Image 1: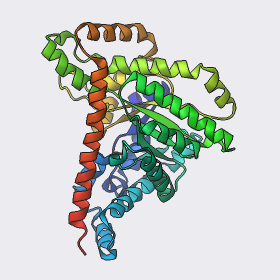
Image 2: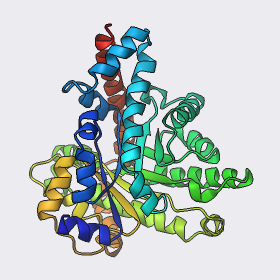
Image 3: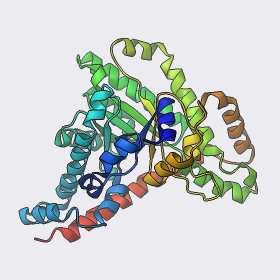
Length: 363
């Protein structure tokens, strides 16, 4: 095992892999990463599946069988993706059992084209939960305004949820409120709250990408590369506020578990920055960091893990946000653009996935 990743795990950070493919599963690579790189969870998204399907022959037999059966493309995509997620969930089941259901989780996203439709998102979440039929599944629901009531409804029905595409502090607070409301609904139905897990995926590097572009235009390059970490650190401060609330304490007493902050989009996109900065600078207890394999390898090789790098820096984070505002950065506009782009990118990847499957649905 990697000594550095061991140290990161020891600080209370769960290491998840932001990737899945059938090739990774059938070669035993995921099992190897669990054994050697401290990986205790997996996240997926439409872009990851589109990429996996475009490489190699791992899906050929299933695609042929689906074509022979005359399955339509939408159901074919569900069959392909849920197959991989079930397999990954089974590989991670020992981790799930060993951690009492906290880790060993695998995430599957609802059709991103439904991100602005509450009822269809809920229906899709129910369908995927039923199709995968694994207790260590997380259904990914985008944190759009329309997604918020879907989060409450799904959790209220006992479906574990990974809330994705969170960029703003205000939206994150709304996500936590939706999660708490879902737990309260589940409690009213007599469900076992301890079986309902949730994480909130707060995106990091995309914030820097958008704000850095605006800082160049504003002639303030000295502030580049600071916004993503500062924004995430303040998200953790908001998380701590909720964890100290009476509302949460009542639910915790009834068996509920925290909705952990998950740092997503942690691959560094600017080559001028440290390739492990979104791991090194976001170490805090009770968090998840989901990494592309390239980032995971970099962390294992040369990351600098030096204890909590979030809570001691709240004041610095507030100062950074104030400096960005003074430089003319419109935070509300930034996070609105990022949410719209995030939904659009996943829709594009989903359509690419549909096109790829369509081309291969030939008997």
